[in-house]
Length: 341
Ligand code: DAH
Image (cartoon, rainbow, N blue to C red; front, side, top):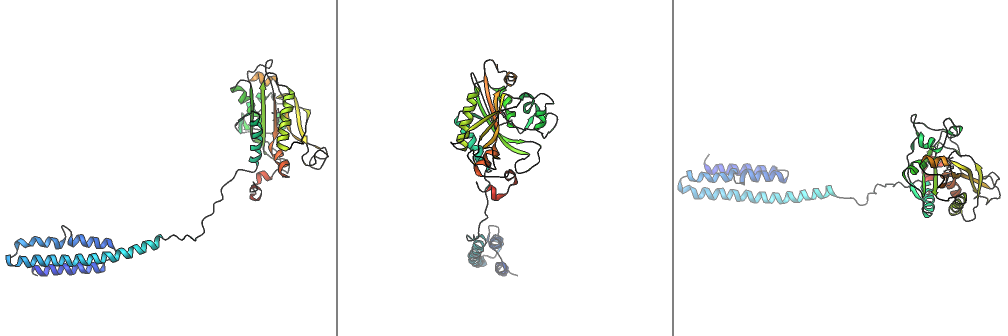
């Protein structure tokens, strides 16, 4: 084979490769292989020095012609490939804006939260601070610091879920009182809301999990009248201006005197109906003057300071406001109920 035939052979080889190429990257490789700085055709030019002088011009021209020819063909193929590949890419990346999107239903606060918020707003309006305290509570705070003597039957009344000997799920939000009192000095006006737990069979009016609001105020010269005024204001703000309150003696170890608090039935207005069982009154919870032992236990001198406290069930209030007649609704997670908010 002479040197001219070498060029022809390389040109043929390159052409075949170009024609069988499937994508631009293959064309780039062919370009480098034959036309690059160290490409096979480019390197042919090095032979020139070893050729007879009269052949050199023709040989150089032949290499360049072959290079130009291939460069033209490559350029042509590259252009066509680029177009084809762009089309494919566009097809692949096409976004069908008519396909229906995925519908995410965002969570919402539980229906009871509205009542929580309304209750808190009333007490914040009266200058109360809102506190949080643990649901897994120490026996000490849930009972002992609240003046429950060891083995007292009142402890059995609040049948509890124990975690271990010293810890239980709090049976009432009153458990936060000693925690707060220890960390501060009077005057204080504080309030908490949250979940409570007691061992109880579940039915329309009982549950093992329920919610309470508990508040107390301590200052010099606080009297039972302050308690009555506060609760009357709360009852009217929450349930309606026509509502009245009733206090009857009751026992809770942490207050003396203690009272059961009732409001005029919001359903019948006090005339008597099946919700208030004909009495015209609905019980909301307990209240009283903070027992001197509680104050003393928290380092507050009962000779100088006095205070009142009260605690209510929140479900009860919500049920009256929204005509819910079964406590289980709050725990059942029936979306038809929950989405009413
Ligand atoms: N903790 C009591 C209960 O769950 C309710 C209660 C009564 C709370 C009197 C108080 C109070 O703060 O002073 O039955």
